[in-house]
Amino acid sequence: MTEDRESLIERVEIVTFEYETAGAQIDSSFRAAGSKTYGPGAIGKDKRYAIRIRAGGGATGEYVMRRIPGALEQTLGLAPLLLGRRFQEREGLYMMMRRNQRSIHSIGLGALDIALWDLAGKAASMPLTDLLGGYRKRLPAYVSTHNSDRAGNLDSKEAIAEFAQYCVGLGFRGFKIHGWHDGDPREEADMVRHVRKQVGPSPSLMLDPACVFDSFADALYVGRACDDAGYLWYEDPLRSSGLGAFAHKKLREKLDVLILQTERVLGPEPKADFLLAGGTDALRVDPNYDLGVTGTMKIVHFAESLGVDVELHGPGPVKRHVMSAVRNTNFYEIANASPGFEDCTPPYYSCGYTDDIRRIDPDGSVPVPLGAGMGVTYDWEFIDAHKTDQAIFCR
Image (tube, rainbow, N blue to C red):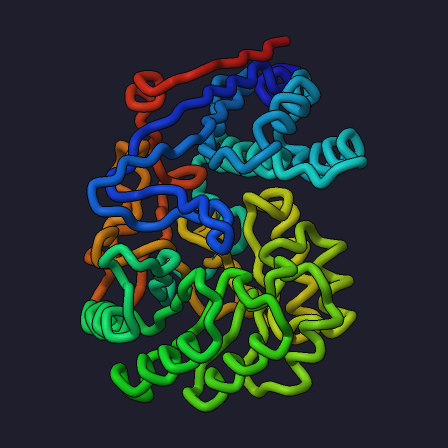
């Protein structure tokens, strides 16, 4: 009975906070559609929410989630359902939360699921990688640029190539380009070939236009440049936000470069349908979007059974732990870097965790944090100092 009481979830706390980011701004132009870009002297705001789930025995699981539209409201709606339930029963909690919000895709479920995995690791004094059966302690990494702009930061093919050479010189084995919002296929294709010419044949190069091309013909034109330049993958070219399998199947039939989709096709079942419909060569997965660690591992194992690769979207401790247990993947992504943003680490860690591109190992790898749970410590003084709201649910 004592063991059961120690396993029961007693309290869920959700704190919203926001902080300023120097040099970042939201581009509200028609083509950019709200993407974060570089602006000299600009001050942006990053909005997040932090979760703490405490069990009766005192163990606490934590996670910080970006304020994706709708996610906070979903998390707040689900949090009370966890009270009085055993934190070890993550599969059952996952199913219960999915059914509760079955009329929508609940991105907010992911944050709670990740915190539950962190709680399980801390209660067992084990890192998340061990709970997942992880076997890799270091992960090959690549840099992906923030959306290139015209403000003096990655504003030309020469500037992008120079930054790619710099990153390769640091040790990175791969480099992914987010092109310009202009959606000019000829300029993009010229840039694709130029960067390959400058960095040479060895580094893996990838292109993610971030859904800027209006027509299939434009996406095909740039895809053929990726073929010519030997790119590893081509991701989200079409303005339809990567949601339609048919158009991407046509791209696959006409191109040699791997098509990487499903960043915005969310959850295990829609991703399975998209893949089986022929819409992609590899799957993009993200515990934040794809219903936590539990949902992500379902996708990983489905893809593995079909001989299909998965690629984790974006950086962060939970992504490192998941990747440590995944065979069918290639790279860890350090995202939204540029000459103006070499350190992409959020400021709410107090343990030295970093995604600063200058901290890459010479062999191009990053470590998996090996402390209990996710192996990181959040700076709650920073979070509380920037708090905008708080909700507490107790038994």
